[in-house]
Length: 294
Image (cartoon, rainbow, N blue to C red; front, side):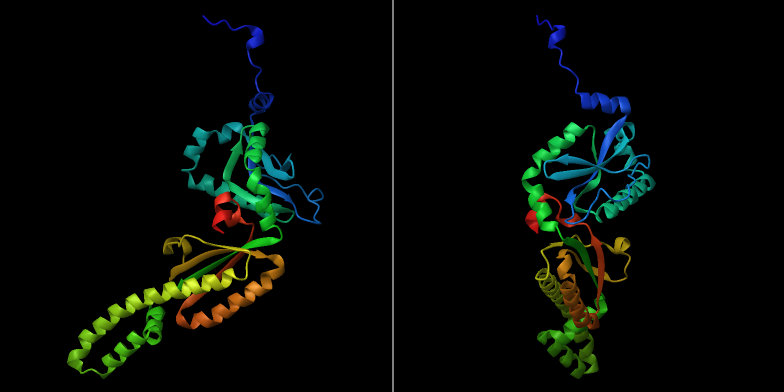
């Protein structure tokens, strides 16, 4: 039989008790450090996702976690599973999260955290910072003085097929044969040309998009190819063929933009439509996996 005495009962964690008594948790936005020459302390307070609380720093060595208080009961794990099915609640939270990140980006070098990263007490937040300390410093070094820019490319299919017929020698020769054929033979040759042109257009698209991405990558610190979005998400009539993220040094942005302008001039006549978005904090370069891939 085991007997437990009063002095053997472990003391409760003071942070947890305080959080429970105050119904408080920590909503974390980013890992960070102040931008060189910028005083974050002099900035106006930033209202968090819960408008009752402002963003503050939690210091761990040379790294900061930027957090604000939220009601612990409102961010309980089981409740969040239900709330993430509520698109209106999720949209309000996402907009608030993005607003805070944008404001913080003025004063800090940021490694943005995922939406709804919540810690129940400060001790667990410090544990997470300690566990990730091996890569956080290097990641902040990499993104310091840089911003993320997105380049999306959309392609008009008909224009691409027309380009393929004029660009690919075999297709060009087949088109010449079609034009010279008798009316009786032309129908079957046109069908053959259409099938070959569709395949040639796919090959041409892959080759040229890889070339565009490679050329842009030479002007930046790091590049990531994102998932291509369906039409119902991106809203363009054309097919998305590139969804790239580029970590661009602020001092080199004009060089990057000039290279992009040259690509626009070269490819627009062939049905390629470019869209530049940003600047953003380094969302695509803020995890160990993303750092390694980049």
